Length: 68
Image (spheres, helix red, strand yellow):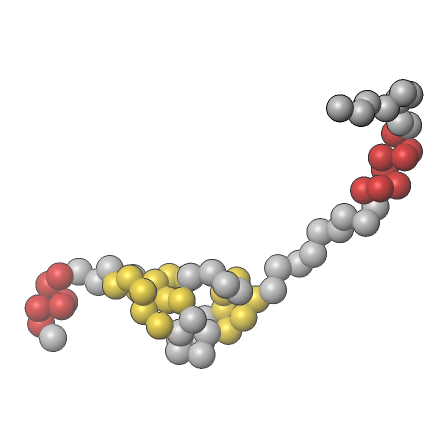
């Protein structure tokens, strides 16, 4: 396995890392609930887990479900 003959300077590594920049996360508004959320992530609204505008998990208490 090849190894460097001499040590690279700190400046050389810093020059390489200047191209790695942090970007702000993209937020979207759900069409069903109107809530803002991170893109490509599921989000909770009133004990329900939504993904792409559809309910994936419903954690409402069983008592309320029996009333309906």
